[in-house]
Length: 373
Ligand SMILES: Cc1ncc(COP(=O)(O)O)c(C=O)c1O
Image (cartoon, rainbow, N blue to C red; front, side):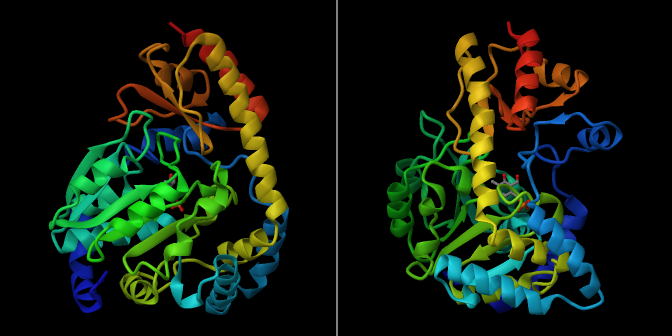
C-alpha cells in the first residue's frame, strides 16, 4: 500500500478537529451509564471482554519496580519491548509500532481512510472502532453480511472490492460474534486483495482461538505490503487498564503510522511497557487464562444446551448468544440484579456475554435462568 506520509501529516490536524466536533459513539464500549455503575458498586462485569485473572503477578511486580524510573521517558524500554516482539514474530523492530491499546491503531487507520474520503469495507457485525473513526472523518463504510455461521465471508468480501475500496477490515476472531475463520482461508484472501487496498486484521482475541497464535497473519507481513495487523495486551495478557497494544506491518507503513501518531510512539509509559516485558516472559500465565476461560465457557454452554439456547461456539472470551429464549429486557433486568452483559444497538437477535471466573459464570447461569421465556 501506499500510506502517503506527507498527505497524512497535513491532514492530521483536520482529522483531530473533525473528531473534536463530531465525537464518536460510546454505544458499543464504555457507555457512560455503565461506567457509573462500575465505579459505584461492584457488579459482575460480563460486558467488556476483560480478563478476570490478570494482570500476571510478574507484571504487577515489574510495574511497582518501574516507578523509580518514572522521571524518565520510556523510549529505551520501547526498544526492549520491540526487541522481544520482533523475536516472537520473526520480524524487525521497524515492523512494529507500540500504541496505547489497539484502539489507537484502529483510530489512526479509520482517520487515514476518512481524510482521503476513501472507503472501508468490512463484514458486519464486527468491532466498530475503525468504522466509527472512519465515519467521523469522512470515510464511506461498506458492509457485507457475515456467512451463515456468523464468520467473515471471503467470497462476498472479494466481490465487494472495487476501485473505490481503500481498506478492508477483518476482525479474527470476530467481536461480537465470537467466531474465527480458517487460517488458510484468511491467508488466501489477504493474498488476493489488490496491493493498492489496505488490509487491517485485528487479532485482539487470537490467543483464545482454536488456531491460537499460529492463526495469526503476522507471518504475511513481509510478503504483503498492504497488510497491517493489530494486537493488544488487553485480553489474554490482562492489561486492559494499562492501555498497550501494537501494530505489525511493513516498515514504510509503520513509519507513516508513527508519524501520524499523536505521541510519536510515546503514548505508553513505563508501567504498560514493563508489564508487557514481564508478561511476554510469562506464557504460563497466558496459558492459564486461556484454560480458565475455556472452563468458564463450558459452564455457560452446558446451561445453554439444557435450555435450548442457540449460541456460537466461542473462539474468544465472550459468547454470542441468541436473544429469543430470553426476556426482551434481559440486559436491563440482569443489570438490576448486578450482572452487566451487552447488547449493541444493531445486534438485533443476540446478546454478548463476556466470560468471567467459573464462580461468576455459575452466578450468571443462576440469575439468567430467571429471564428465560
Ligand atoms: C476486536 C477488538 N479490537 C480492539 C479492541 C481494543 O482493544 P485495546 O484495549 O487494545 O484498545 C477491542 C476491545 O474490546 C476488541 O474487541
